[in-house]
Length: 317
Image 1 (cartoon, one colour):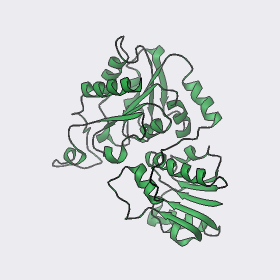
Image 2 (cartoon, one colour; image 1 turned 180 degrees about the horizontal axis):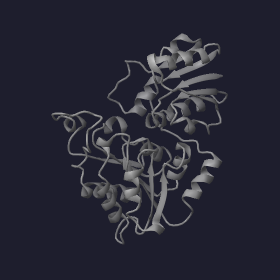
Image 3 (cartoon, helix red, strand yellow; image 1 turned 180 degrees about the vertical axis):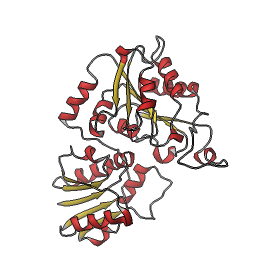
Image 4 (cartoon, helix red, strand yellow; image 1 turned 90 degrees about the vertical axis):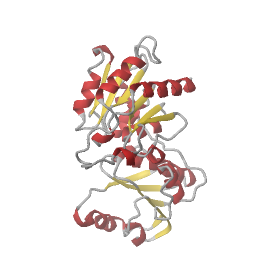
C-alpha cells in the first residue's frame, strides 16, 4: 500500500502531525509511506520503519517547489494521500483515497485535533517520535546516566515570543536549589543554529559540572532522543517544546504572542504558563512589526512560572 503524507516545513507542526501518521501506520501495517516535509523536520521521519522515502521540499519562487514535487510523484499509483498542506499536488495525482486539510476544518481546534479532523477521527492520535538506536546512542553521549536533568529551551524562532534570559536563569536557580523540585539537577540547554547567544547565557549561569551543552549540536531526531532523557523540560513555544512532549518528557511551555489553544504542548504530561495579555493584545501597539518586535513576554513572571511548574510537578509525582 503506497501512502503519500504531506506535512509541514516547520518542526513544531511536523511533530504535531506525527500522531496522524502513526494512525495511518497502525491501520495499514503494509503501508509504504513517502513523507513530504521541510528541511528541518526531515530527520524525525527517517527512523520510521514504514517510511521508505522522505522528500525534502525546499521553497522556491512562484511555488515551483510544488511543481517539482508533482513531477516526482505523479507517475506512482498512490493508494492514499494525506495532505496537511492543502496543495494542488494531492488533487492532481492518481489516488484511491484522499484526505486533505481544507477550509472545512475547524481552525479553533488544537493542531493535533485539526490533523485528526482531516481523516474524521473521533479521538485525536497523540504525536509520536520514532527514535533510532543511533540517535539514542548519540543522546547518551550528550546526557550520560547520572542525576536528574532539567531541560531548558530559552530561545524560539521569533524574538517576541522568547521569555527573557534573566527569567530563565532565575527560574533554574529556584527549581534546582536545595528546596527546589530538582535540587542540584544538571541543566541541559537546547537551541537551534542562530540562537546560540541567549542559550549560552543561560547555560553559563550554572556551574560547569552541571552544564550540558546541546546548543546547535544535533539534528532534531537526536535532540528528541536527548529530550527523552530529561526529567523535565521547560521552554518557549517552539518545535523543541513539541519534541519534548512527543518524547514523553514532562513538558511546560511558555506562551506570549502565540495561541495556547492551538499550540500548547499535547499530552497528559504537559502544561503551559502564559502572559497576562493575549496574542492580539500583545501586538496591539503603534509601530508593531513582526520582524522588529522585542520580547513581548515580560508580564509572565518568574513567580507565576514557578507556581505553575511546582503544581505540575506535584501532579506528576
